[in-house]
Length: 156
Ligand code: RB5
Image (tube, rainbow, N blue to C red; front, side, top):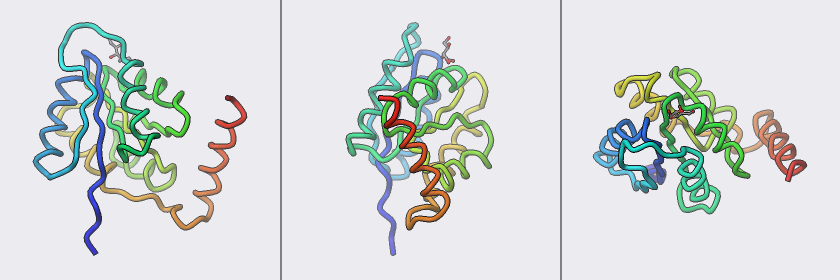
């Protein structure tokens, strides 16, 4: 059975926008539905604004996964993880990008444009987007992700 392609939303700050645009070109070419919430310039800006814009689309069900680029990927991930329902992972190795989908059902990938090159970022994003969640039918990973949601609900 053909799997439906995930809908992707991209965001970046001034440090990540060139990487974001390079990744958008790759995923567009592959036929993915893309939303770009900015930025599109190298002028200094504040990454939490763009992390929130992208993550809001994911929790609203208008996108399946967010890909967020800043200098380190860390600011984007901290901001994204404040949005209820977002599980953001900052990755610079393929194993983590794969297992954060399999085990954590991560729905946002954060990339550091000053940490990884375009080639590695493309591989990281590809693995992240193409890997499914192992806990879809319950089991230990679903229980653990459920516990994360419980923490989130206690801290509103
Ligand atoms: C911007 O200089 C930089 O701080 C930002 O892109 C990001 O790396 C923050 O975590």
